Every structure is written in C-alpha cells, then in structure tokens.
Image (cartoon, rainbow, N blue to C red; front, side):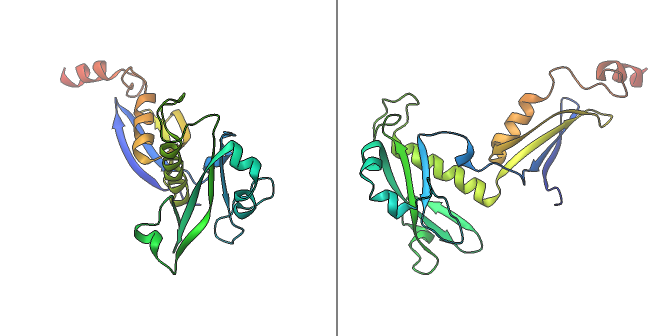
Length: 195
C-alpha cells in the first residue's frame, strides 16, 4: 500500500512527516473492559461480544444491571459513520438505521454527572468513544517520522487518532537541541556561512 503523507514540515531543523496509519488498531482493541460496542450481525461493520449481537445483549438482565446502554446508529454510504443520535444523515431511511449498542460500565461512569474518576459522564464519554470510532472508520489515524538533515531516522510512532493530535505529538517528540547539518550544529554552520 502506498504511503500517504499528509504533512511534511521542518521543526527545529528536523524533518517531520505525518503519515496515514493503514495498520491502525481499532478502538475496542485498547483493552478497556468498561466499554463494549456491539452491533447487529451485518456485512458492513460487525462487532460481537462473547459471540452475541446487540439485540441479544440489549435484553440481557445482567448487562442492564452492570452497564449504561446507548443506541448506536450508522450511516452506510461509501463508508461507515456512527452516531448516538438520529439527526442529519442518520435520519436517512435508506442508508441509515440502528446498528447496535454502546455499553459503558456503571462502575466506572455515572450517568449525566461529573463525579467520576475522569470527570466525564457516561453520556459524554459515549459521544467521545463514537467520535474515536468515526476517526478509525474514516482513516483519520496517523503516525509520524522524524529525520535529521542527513535523512537519518530519529523517532517514529503510530496510532494517533486525529491529525491535530498526531501533529502535536510529533512536535513534542522532536529533540530540543537543533538538528546538526552534516554533523555540525546549526549555530556553527551559520557562523561558517557568514564568515
């Protein structure tokens, strides 16, 4: 697969490339047991939990006792987009509909309060989680590569959701000392040029 470079810029004398992460990890593979996205069995976007689909888990009394449940809607037209509401394109009767449920552990989030370990309500975090899924589904996951003036690799990292976040992480990983040019520091090279 061809590399897609979204941005290529200099910072502190180093070259920074922001590159699409075609091998990105799905948000449900992060290992958080307090969040479960489950869908219906379908051919476009399917996530099961212990082999069960959303309709099966929606009726499970144990799930109702332990988790907040948020209905998830999908708009499927040249891609998949998810939402917790039915507004906009998610109201389209042809290309959208309910596709599943997002479950958030009651032990970790309160519903519509801000008294939690992360100061986020379950409803707010559900929206953030769906936004992360949309970034993943639309290919908005990035990596960066940092090289010096000679093209030598300095650092790289992958799996950043959102281009702005990837850019800020890349810049924060550029070394503090200016990049040497042909083995000579920028300040010395500049003095030699002026002489």
